[in-house]
Image 1 (cartoon, rainbow, N blue to C red):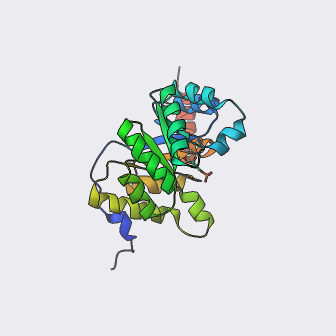
Image 2: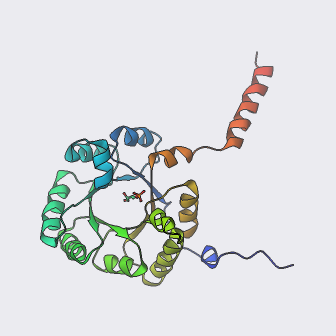
Image 3: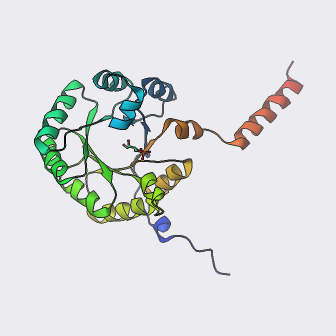
Length: 232
Ligand code: E4P
């Protein structure tokens, strides 16, 4: 009997490495503190929209997060390379845990090259294609962030882009981590792990779902009920 068809990207052999890092996608410090207390949080990604939603001082927010996790993405808002360089150097001076987030534009590529020469870590945001991913990696990005949810929103398959990027990365061994961004549900995280993506950034509500399973709840209740019957 024929085996069921498996999408080709799921059968690639991906070399063993350290587990996928989990970041929280937020500018809410209390949420970072809560998830960090679980002992599983590797970093935080912020963006101007998330910062505006919280309405708090940006520098203060970043500094408080840097006390909680070892990697905090802080996005530049300048559109030109010199402006990005100036902002990014300032952010990087705030704390050693800061990663400068740079948009995927040609000005952003110039800024990435500059930051690489200065030893400043970067995260390239708003990546929507393999060609953008390759350019950012070649320009020296530490991390690239393809946005899967926003691709799904257009009716395309966001995780297919991650599969394509991971396949390209296998060929070339770029020293650049692939961060699955704009995640919207737990299946995005599961698929990212299947594909061997290096990092996922996850909204607070989705992160809270990750430890949950109804069979854990019913199993625990049964253990507790049975224990009540026998305990002295
Ligand atoms: C990533 O760094 C971005 O902050 C984020 O994942 C964007 O997600 P959204 O598409 O839900 O705004």
